Image 1 (cartoon, rainbow, N blue to C red):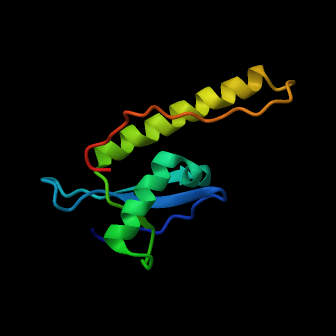
Image 2: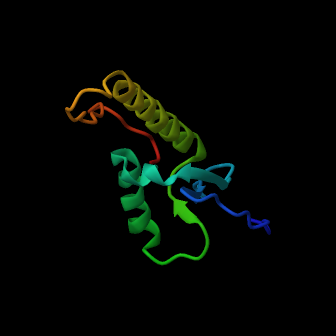
Length: 112
C-alpha cells in the first residue's frame, strides 16, 4: 500500500481496511462503516477473525481479513437487515413490546 492521505472519520463511524494479500489482485481497500456494525453478529464474527489473524495491537485503521467482494456482500446484508429492522420499528413504534433481531442460519462468506 502506498502513501495515503489521512482522512478524518465522522463521529459515529469507523475506518476499516479490507482485503487479503494472498488473493490474485492483493488489493486492500478502505471503508468507513457505522459504529453500530460493531454490535452486529456477522461483523462481530469478522472482528473475532481479525483478532486471531492480526492480534489486538495495530497501527492505523482496523484491518479485516476478508476479501473486498465478500466484505461488500457482508455490508449489504447488514444494511438490508438493519433497514428491515428499522422499518418494523417504524410500523410498531406505538407498541410497548421489544423486537428481536433474527439472522438466517445458513449465511456464509467465502473469506470472511
